[in-house]
Image 1 (cartoon, protein in one colour):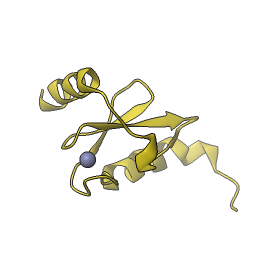
Image 2 (cartoon, rainbow, N blue to C red; image 1 turned 120 degrees about the horizontal axis):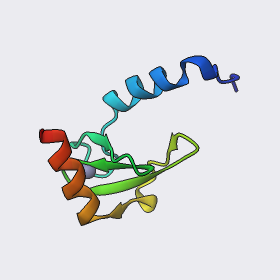
Image 3 (tube, protein in one colour; image 1 turned 45 degrees about the vertical axis):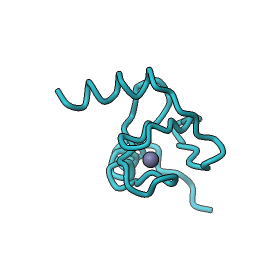
Length: 77
Ligand SMILES: [Zn+2]
């Protein structure tokens, strides 16, 4: 266990997120919904984020059509 370097955590998190693939469909990119969830832009599963840590267990995912529509409409802009 390494102690987290809080100073760089946000940057690391951004970099980390940009590389993440959806663990369910292994195809979608995970988009920060801005509401403490990461939403897959392919299958629409939403993964909860707790204290900045994404919970990517497939069992945790919920399909939130409304959130997906919101996120995708923003990401296209
Ligand atoms: Zn997916």
